[in-house]
Structures are given as C-alpha cells and as structure tokens.
Amino acid sequence: MIDYLFTEEQQMIRDLCRQITDERIRPVAAELDRTGKFPRDVMKVMAQSDLFGIYIEEKYGGMGGGITEICIATEEFSRGCGGIAISYGASALGTYPIILFGNEEQKQKYLPLLARGEKLAAFGLTEPSAGSDASAMLTTAEKKGDKYILNGMKHFVTGGGEADLYIIIAMTDKSKGARGASLFIVEKGTPGFEFGKKEDKLGIRASSTTELIFNDCAIPQENLLAKEGMGFIAAMKTFDMSRPGIGAQAVGIAQGALDCAVKYARERKQFGKSISTFQGIQWMLADMATQIEAARALVYASAREIDAGKKDVGKDSAMAKLFASDVAMKVTTDAVQIFGGYGYMKEYPVEKFMRDAKITQIYEGTNQIQRNIIGLALIRETLK
Image (cartoon, rainbow, N blue to C red; front, side, top):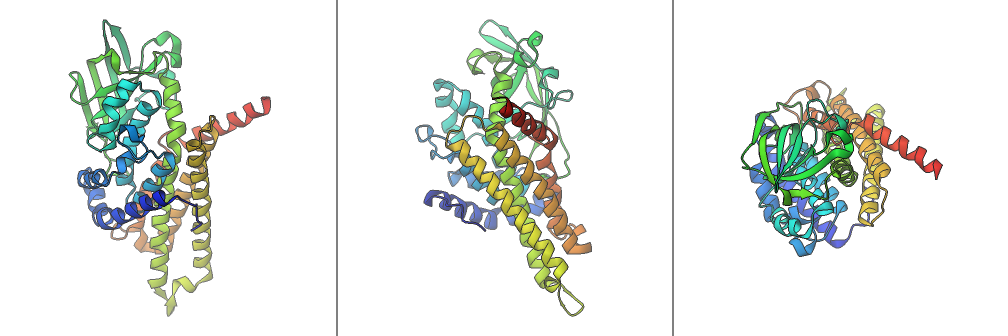
C-alpha cells in the first residue's frame, strides 16, 4: 500500500478502526448479514471510541477533522463489513447538512450529541417517483404560522428507523421546481412521523433501510436549514462532500475481498501446488491490487481537496465515487472467481463482498449520474 502521508492523528484513527474491524466487526459480519439486524453494539463501541466526532469541529465536541478522517474510518470498517461501515457513514451524511448549512443555534443543539454518538442522523431525499430527478418530488412542507407541515414519503433511507435525526428535503413551492425545495431537521418521535417497511436488501444488510412517512407532521420553523428554496442546492453540496466516503467504502470492500483472495490462493492446492503459483491467478491478483490502489489514491486526493477548502469539488468527488465503486464491483467479482465454486457459497466471505459492492455504484447518485456530473463539469470548464 502506498504511503498517503497521514498525520499521526490520522494514523491513530486508522489503527483504532482496524482494531475495531478485527475484534468487533468481522466476528459478527456474517450473522448480521444473515439476519439484517442493525449493529447497535458496534455503533456503541465506535461512539465510546469518539469516532463519530472525528469530522466535527472541536467547539462542538468533535476532533476537528474532515472528509479524510471519514474516509479513513469508512475504508477500515468496510474491509470487515460494508453494511456496518455504512451504518456509521450514514450518520455523517445526515450530519453534514447541519455542519454546512446549520445556524449556530442548530449546531449547538445537535452537533455535540452527534459527535458523542448519542444520536445518529440520516438523510431523506429519494422518493418512489423521485430519485435523481428532484423536481419530481412529492413531499411537501407548507408554512403555517411558526411551523411547517410535512406530508409525503421518503424511501431507501439508510439508517431509517435507527437514526434519531432526519434531514428531509421537501417542496415549499412546487411552482419553482427544484428551486422550490427546502431542507428540514426532523426528530424521531415527532407526531405525524412514522416509519414504513424495512427493505430486504441484496447487500449491506446490517444497515437499516426504510421508508419514512409524514402525515401532517408539524416541524418548528427553527428546524429549517439554510433558507427556503435552498434544499436542492444544499443536498447537492452535501453529496459533493460525502461521495469520497462512498469511494472509501468501495475501496475497503475491494481490499477486504482481495485480502481473502490472496489468502485463499496461497492455501488452495490444485495439480499438486498452490494456485498462487499459477500465472493466471497472479495476474488477476496484480490487476486487483493495482486497481484498488488507483481508486484509493483518487479517493484520498479528492478528500484532501475538500478539506483544503477547494470550492468546486463536484467533478472530483464524482470521479472518486465512480471509479472506486466500479473497481469494487470488478475486484469482488474476480475474488469470487479465484475462489471458484467455493466463492459462490455463503460459507466463504467473498460472495458477501460482491453483494455489498454493488450498492456503491447506485446510492448517492448512480454511476450514470456521476458521469453526467463529470461530463457537464468538463464542458463548463471549456467555456471559462
């Protein structure tokens, strides 16, 4: 692995997360995948280790890090289980809109709780008829006095049912299309806010994915993030920050699969010798390792740009998510191939890595959407 010149504190985070992965995540990964049970006990260990605050400012109880620290933790956790890793990462996705667009009162109220892991956050954007097309959103927020009344539904919400705070995008002025969307903080237990079905997923099964249902749900006006009409912009800015984290999840999943494939190749005997001595297997492993390292380099380069304060990071973060997730799908599929028939069996971990990898090509914008973002950015650059 290339030396990414992590600071001493970042190395400590990496080592701590690797220890948690080895001692607490790997032993339960297969069982949680089978049952779909949320990893509450592992989340508590992460909270006790102060890992929920690594990207939150010190004045709000965090460690003052940024996206790089999130990527380090997410990659390490994903080597053990993509579902547990995204259960951690989803709270960061729900926290970042408060970091980026919250006023001081909102930050003081929520960020210390999130930094300590006492509360988890989630982000609700997707609807049955509105995924990448935010203008098709049907959830509404009507201003009545000093409250907003939410009605509608969100689905495919990672952390749904388990999180305590939900960042919800809803239409405050349908006539303006995407520019009529606003962003709200909704607390679990608010009257009129219920959870729908929990999804039965192909992969990342340890994470909770549910519907959110709003039926005349009254939200205090002080729970509006930024200004009315800023919801879509705020959501896109949040994804620009968070997509390297999905890239890190993909890198971790791919690395976990490669580690298993190398170990199996050394142990598996055919024709009287280890299959790791066969040139065909060596070339596969070499390509897998090279692709992972290239993806890792792109992920951490984009994360560092964000942390350094670069303003326009949309193209770079989309590239990181796109490339790393495509690599994860390729590498995990090759890992299953190296295992042969055993790789297709749940007795071995590589089929889970392959199932977990697929979602990284889909959520926070499909890879087709990422290509749109990258292509449009390239065209705009030529017009400057």
